[in-house]
Length: 426
Image 1 (tube, rainbow, N blue to C red):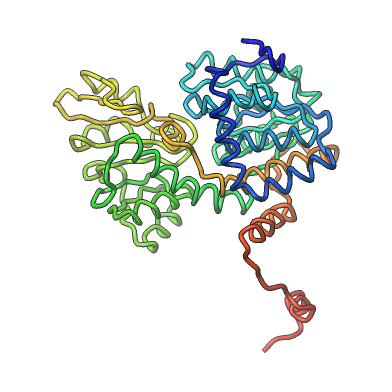
Image 2: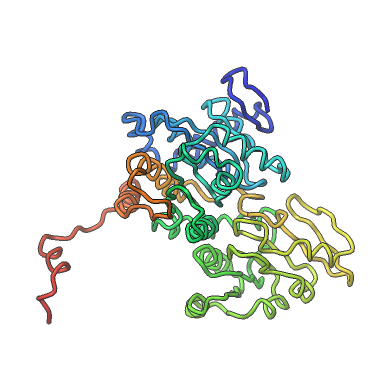
């Protein structure tokens, strides 16, 4: 770890000299994060997080930087590490250290050992609140740093994958503090997951490959909110979209939305571009690689790199080479080539910049308000997973509409009375 001569903070970033570029990009993102701007202004005045130690394991992007700055301005002592080895924007990490005096431990492309060293570095700040994007911090606390548990008042979780892990912990009785599922907020998953993931995943695949989507058979594995968003955007670019699912209701919805639905075993034979967005493991495996056409492109936009069975692909291949940034070409025994993007990690962050600031504005507004809620209410919360309080969720939506210059109707007293009654019928 290095020590900055400017801030005297411990940190580990690629190059502190990248800070000037990172600061410009952070300011650019801030321009489009109107709700977070309002929260930051209030936080700076009220200081609701005064002295609270926050450890965040999130994608180190321009949008995350503005969340960290908002928490800092609210009085929090923030330390940040990356939630994915390929999701860090090195100039942003440098600026957070140099310009905002926030300790960051993140380097794009860091290996497995460095990733976990960085995670444990933020835990050395002895957090009272953790912010997760995949539940890695909570898992580390519960399994390796149980000495920190007495200090922790609560946590927030950003992803579907992380919420699944946390609910499993709660069910097994091992969760020791309350967690707010930011991912379940309407102003998060309906927008961030659907519109953010949809656009940024297309962006990541195009940046990595320079492929035309029009006329391509694009296979979307998983029709949750992220899969819906990607399918929608791929269709809009002229792709022939095929959906694979295990949930009959979601599969039926995909059919009604105009997509072909079939098992992966069938889709693998005809797809040109594949993208997994399920949150589960082993979605594309050896049997699928064995029938893919020459030149098939395979990517993942789920949180962890386990959705594609990369060891199986390597076992089937006689050679491997990198043909473009974030593109690995695997040549199979029969000569067919399969292209894996971004090492099977989140392609929208590996080769692109992640979600646009406009949509992350709402997600991170929920993060900031949830941290404030934990400080005020943690003593009354049990060690389980809670939704974002409805009033906070609604306030984020209202603030976003106002920032966009959009007005909506309000109920009259008569309408409110009617909706709350049962004795006025036909």
